[in-house]
Image (cartoon, rainbow, N blue to C red):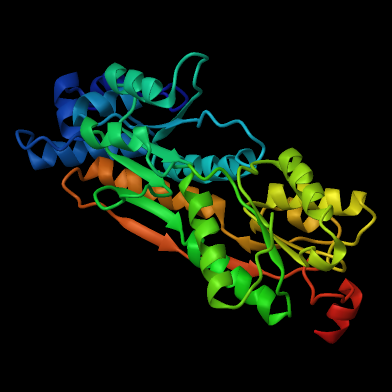
Amino acid sequence: MSRSTPRNETMSIARLARHLGLSEGTISRALNNYPDIAEKTRERVQKAARELGYRPSSSARRLARGVIETIGFVLPTCRTQHSDPFLAEILNGLATELALHDWDLLVSAVPDGQNEVDVIDRLVGSCKVGGFVIARTRRHDARVDYLRQSGVPFVVQGRTDDPSDYSWLDIDNEQAFIDAVSYLRRLGHVKIACLSGDPTMNFAWQRRSGYLHAMAQQGGHIGVGYLIDGITDAVSAKDATNRLLSITENDRPTALLCVTDAVAIGAMQAINGAGLGVGRDISVMGFDGLPIGQAVHPALTTLHQDSYEIGREAGRMVLGLCTDPSSLPKQTLWQAKLTPRASVNPPGTSPAQHNQGG
């Protein structure tokens, strides 16, 4: 006969066993659907567990199923401003998706004197995580090389030069910058400069490639000094933009395509500081779709990628790999959405005139 158990008492396997008058081993095996437990007993145990609010701990599930229900995310060693808002949104989406499935997210920083592979290796060796999500991939990425050999499930936000044999979710960065140049050319811009990022980072290299391809195909003009690599934050963007502004007025670009929104905002600060008008003298376009782009003046035209949803999808993908190790790699390519705002206008047109004309 079942014994009464106070509902405000934390339910455990031991208390559930006392409540049903069964052994703890029988309770555990019934909850985990072992075939040696009679169906009637299994249904009785699982019904009581639902009614009394029993929830297995993650450690108990790990022991029962052999699955470590924690996903690791090692923060990239790059600490520049361009990465932080994007990564924060990804982590938010990833943590949300994992929490919906009662999985945990372990975020680990890289201590001084170590690299990301050292930290990943330590987490793998300690059996603290069942899988990984990594972000901000390099064209040749040691983290991906390590995880390929580790046997641990992983999903990459981004890609490397050779993305054929692992699961990844990425934005079509090259096509996005082709679309950006096409948009600027339709507005009448010919002299279009580009503040590009770290060329060892694959997303920056792809965007740079899209700019060069589109300018060559669409008759754009890349003047001396128009393409500047290694621009990773607002500070370096201000310095690079000031160099562009020092070009004689006849040769100065009329539009500036920036690798990220943070870089674009730094460029806008330099343009305003020089007494010129963003969207009037020089149009500026960013990439990421960060909320701050709507708060600056004029509002920033951007190529929008939903970093929160990227995090959610990465969570779904890594959960699928962890729960079904036999599944094949899943590779997903999303398109960025061009979001026009007041920072981009036809050459020589004020934002107000362009808005009235549109």
